[in-house]
Length: 199
Image 1 (cartoon, rainbow, N blue to C red):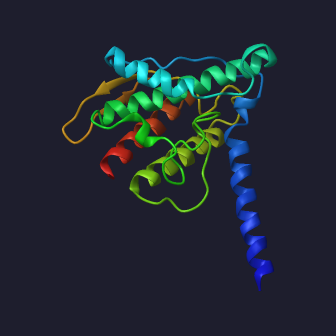
Image 2 (cartoon, one colour; image 1 turned 90 degrees about the vertical axis):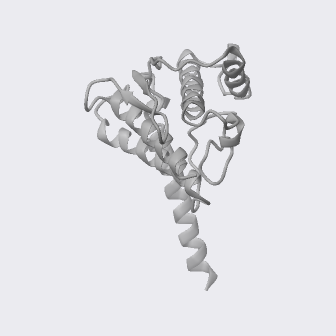
């Protein structure tokens, strides 16, 4: 019987898109504030330019005259988050080309043009893809854990310090325990740890 299989597949896809909606619920409201990522990562000018060029490809909605101020703030914060993730990955794995992570597998940065955190669907294809999936799940939990805060969203900036190590380059999250910013930082920290150690 194909009908039950189609129904269950349709239900799974609908559930995936509703989780995307809940992940971005705060980012759609007027409450979003621009926040910064404050850390001590330094790259040469060419590497920083590469990050900017990658993010310039993000033809985000609402840019220019047609978008509302709220949408422009959201888009600006999404770009900051995208750049932060690319910087963290480059810090964690300096030899790798930043573009290698884009549109990789089922979960790794599938929609760079609009939203670097667009969730994927399906089973991760390998450990790196699993790390991207874990990041998305972690960021969904932030919305649940901090649902009373209308300004908490997966694109929040945070404070961190780099912590180079023997196995991989780590980071220390510096915002207050149990804060939205700290939770966001810890998700990103776990992501770079899994992404590098699982390859």
